[in-house]
Length: 506
Image 1 (cartoon, helix red, strand yellow):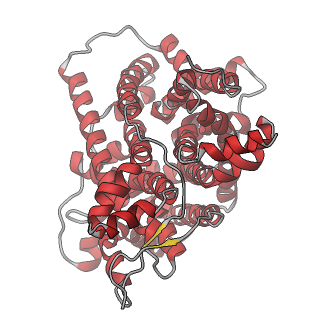
Image 2: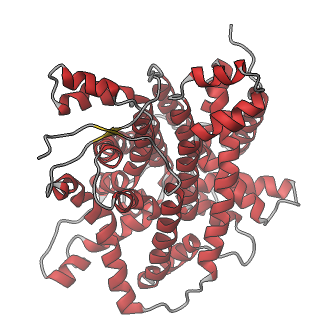
């Protein structure tokens, strides 16, 4: 029988607030008809394929890059970390549009360089874009788990004759499985909830059809498709919950020192990712900026985006702390955590619609910044919960018990022991919420106060109007502000160091 945890009531209240928009969906949804029609089955197949490819690709890209940034002692390490997670600062729909505009006959690559390239579209194009802009989830959560590992086991394996690469595969990766699963879960939920990328790439998924139904005033059908999508989300959450890793005693982290002059070789595998996810979109933005200039753009759009996103990040980590603590305290707490993840699977357009309905019922919330921040928190709370929990699970329970034996109360132990030791996860969670809120589009379009124009909404308005060149300035501003915010949040990260050579140093 599980012992009662003081964090359960607060975690339960947060879970109740998270599930409220889903209750609205049941009220709005039409009667379920035609579930086994060819169109509906095609939506299920496309959605599952896109999600599966996104998860596999983000793990294959994110895990090696997490090891690179966590272990390898490279020059300008902080710069490379920020650069590799910078795709979080690029809205996926903008990445999709720049790749779509760059490749193919008549694309920007052909216009500038003079040679034709294959068109990026359909399932392949959508999968490529989703992998490029979701692998940082895996990178950050896996890196947080890797930095909490003790290098003693690696040294023991090396002393017994095991090669360094085998040590990574058989000793390091299994112990980081929780972080990998948390990042893969976030990538899967992002793929399930995004509508911009499938729409631009011409791929019919649930999210694209939901958006079409909403624009056609078919709110009942949009709600019904959303509930079907939530069934898939529930399956993803169940699969992630089956991943179990035994907590270990934390210690000094592994360090890998490359041979002199070989540091660039370690970065070489990351080059294609950086080129496609960052360099190419920035080059397209630069071309558009040269052609169109900055007409119609105001700096207030950037301030509005940063202000709302910062408030959402603060509120999200405060709410995530009791949820993450409850998840490690028993089955009830784990259930509360599972419930909070549902918000990330609700498309932003549907979340916005549900909260508009709530705002009409509660006039003091309607058309306020608080309601917009609430939408961000409900959508992106799992980002904070996942990183905080994966970090907290690596803590040594003996440290907490020792503090209790010495007379410290629960609150003092949390304030002076638990919270400082989980600050890496808190920081990473706040960074993820901030960056995702910066690029959230549908909820912002529906819930922004009158006269509130953000970078995301301005980008979409010029996109819909066909003035793609005017997207350059807000796009570049979004990348710059998010990159600076990410660098600031990562600058507080601290870790112990322990040297182990990846190869023989001269």
